[in-house]
Image 1 (cartoon, rainbow, N blue to C red):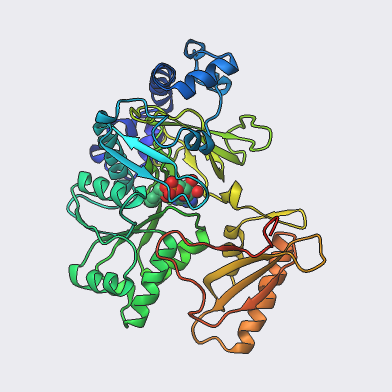
Image 2 (image 1 turned 30 degrees about the horizontal axis):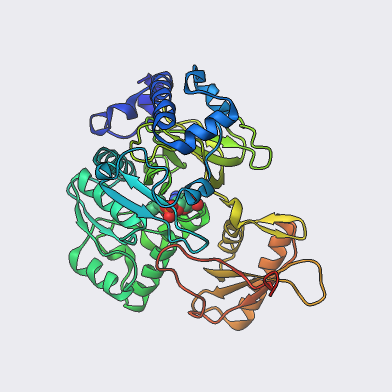
Length: 445
Ligand code: DLL
């Protein structure tokens, strides 16, 4: 570790994994060795990779340096669906220790598998992420990520255990009970989606509990896009730190990247286990660090489901490492390319509305976006439905709605209607919150 690195990191080096202390050069040589192994491992064991590499005219031996990764074909969710359920597994079923799957609301679910070794590495990386975010060995951890096929609950659970925490496996939902147990069990940290934490904070307010007066000291939040404005909203209500944790099932689950509490400047990607790239989602060209595009991951140590150049659809950029100088950070995720709203030719994401709305004091973070196609028109229209904050008069709420509409026009460049919803009437989150309601007539309907 360089002296700059030591200065940048406020964490006690003796508590870090050896890889967290590596220089950029050390990380890159580790990545090259692991990448060379992974591409030949995938080619030898998974028919889909063999077929794709052969069709593209590339062979694992072509990977001589890290930049050579760009000649290998991408992997998509569609590849996992086509080989449903286990066609992309690289080990016999008896070596698969656990299976998770996406909810599959659109089409077949995507199924992912882990060997015992994969589970151990996953727990290590979640433990590393939690530790970076300020959770400590011996802490009580209230885990409100959903348990089951979703990777959030069990992924966070075993990571917290690996760190040496006492885990309270409450899962999502039953919010009054969550509030009760936070009061009674006095946890130090809470793990949840940012919008579910909002639901819990609202329930605390109803129960007359000030979140700042509870035992909680840290929140580690992820599984959905959230903004700096949302961090400010949550932290100012809770009086303690909120950090980001990122991941996706196809690449591992939570803990692909985690945010350091001392810098709170975006999640560090654990590059000893994953090689990230940013590509232009339209031309598929690899972009330079700092440029915005779609995040792509290649796993470096996975056994059951090695994943080569997986297109996440998550839009962000790569930034240099700070608190962990050897590993790059990712900027906040603006949104998923498949969640992008196109309004009269302008691209728009729910996070942009969150950012603008939360800067208007009379408005709450509770909003949803409705997309319609008005009769006889060729263009879509969007309505933002948003609740005002408690105690705001009807007049002030309407003024705030007009301000929001103007600000959207100024900052995003598109006109939309803003309507005020009665407090408590919009859907609340118990996990990943749905922000977009597409009310356009379905094709053929
Ligand atoms: O949501 C894994 C996870 C669980 C991450 C708990 C963090 C905490 P999936 O269900 O496969 O896995 O969904 C992955 O969720 O591609 C992003 O679009 C989004 N996502 C996950 N973490 C973040 C984050 C889990 N920190 C998809 N910020 C990803 C923004 C996130 N989006």
